[in-house]
Length: 522
Image (cartoon, rainbow, N blue to C red):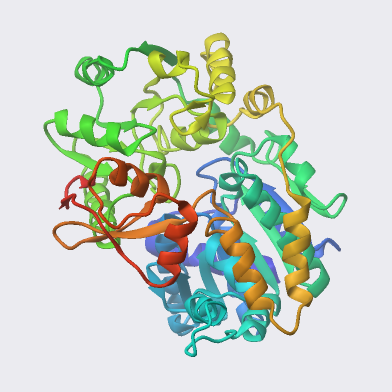
């Protein structure tokens, strides 16, 4: 039974991390997943509730039943701690940890997602599900390009690896909400799982109700959180005391004003979040004392080092400041008693506030700031976000400064996310047709992959650049294009499709920018 596996997970948690008791919504979710006739579930629980224990329970149970589970996450940052915990869980119960494997850009433990318990990214899952696994993408590209050294890849093996699973679990599903492309893949995958008998579980802390319009109608059971589900947890989260203070700042003064906020505040652990890497780096350089910088343009090794350093500071209780970008929103289990964050739509804000008063802290100060110059510009975008969403967010916070972003934020979501989520039914149809093409499906998948600019789920692909001092870092096309325009990259294409073709051919782009292990690639 799933609850027996759940109790074994709790035994591991108690042995490694201290007290751990059954949580009502976790129990309810596992009971419904096991006892319901439904094959698809949407589990919504607040940040810090322990949704990962549901994944661990299902993985352990299915392994003991000789079945397979794939757990997929939108970001690599979310995987490493989960892989470590899953391996330790298996070892704790006398099971070889080698049955657990990870597959993403930084880890090739589980090629073709073959391990009985595989943790991967949504990106890698999308490639493998469509018969274009990362192991084969280059070979298929060479075949399409007419090279004698190309091949059609192992698409039948890729399909069987994915669609022979008993469960595909997709966590932090909210990170797919803002992209029509990712929502289209999600719907296509759920349809394909229904056709092949794979059960699907979506999990998140923050999701507008309108998201459910994307899901197969009447086929997904929603397991949401309310006060009645867990009064103790609800009361503890509701007791967090803070008001959201809004700051309207000019671009030329924003960094100095934010530094003043820190100087005038009494805190032990501060979290400062920006919407761009450049702002985060500039602010970090202004700070003195113990500090950690986290953003997307670090090498994998340096990201791990920074997370280790951050854990040390948190465990020691030393006063420090964490400066970050959206990369802080998921997979970074920290807590702060002061948060200063740039405005972002509710999904992102709630995730950022999930790193504020996360543990035993009862009170703190919270600031949300906006750069007035950017807000007043004619662009439809505020930094990296839709400007209308940002304006609605500010309007809501202006009228609801006492909103609790830890527990009762459904109204916030529903008042800001007014548009219906967008899916592309032509893309869904093309993805489903690939699965029925038994002659050259991988080439069809590659052509769609190129048409979608190098990802079935993300808006924009990642490209590898080599810094002046020899470090390899993954960046967006926007970064490549910016370096090209500034004369800092001689071989960077100005067209995303050209960049994608070069990347598929194995090319690395060289930039005239140094990499600094403390601040990354800027």
